[in-house]
Length: 253
Image 1: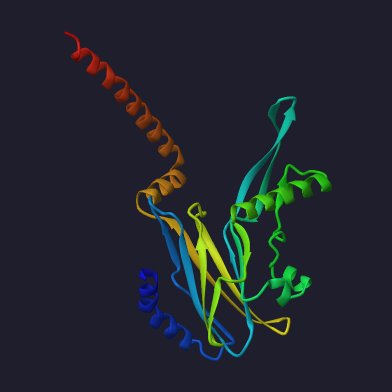
Image 2 (image 1 turned 120 degrees about the vertical axis):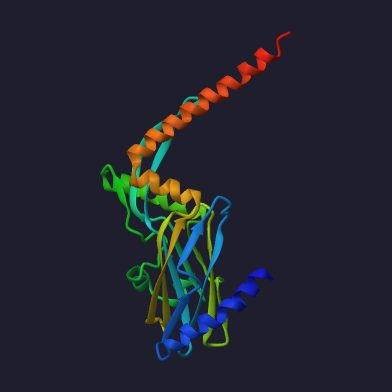
């Protein structure tokens, strides 16, 4: 109920923005241009409302900032598991969400899906250090399997709700461990197997409150932040070590 009340409040502003761009085949207006992460952040839903001129299907692609992750392979030696090879995977988006009014494979050819980046395993990644082609491909496939298992890469043909043949609302869930940075929301209008309209919006995910202060301090003044953090940890250790000692001394007869 609370969610729908919020929609009723912001809907007039959305409609005004859509009317200001009347005449375009596709218009999409994000709910907001910024998402704040606080201590109690447990994920949220990002909404976008839009309008299309005439009949057609919609595809919405949400792409998060690039990230670098380390993958490792475990090797079994007898009854024991030991750490094996490790590689870094860089250049891939942290989030890749594909939403549509129908399965994307039924809307566009494979070539067009590749052209518009609509394949979950089509993102370009770098494997470091450089490996032979077959070995690099194994690590690449493992990376995409892990991203899809976590839900960071997924496709859904139920997230866009149409109202009549013109208006639509898309609900895009954002996970609790979402990466800080700028996200793009690209919407495509498809008719007869061709992309005939395109709209791109962006929103930013940032830390808020104390988390933002710590983040900025750690990145803008890394050396000073490290020194202060070390001194604070030492002081806390001394304090915690002294408390039991004083209690024991006062407890003596």
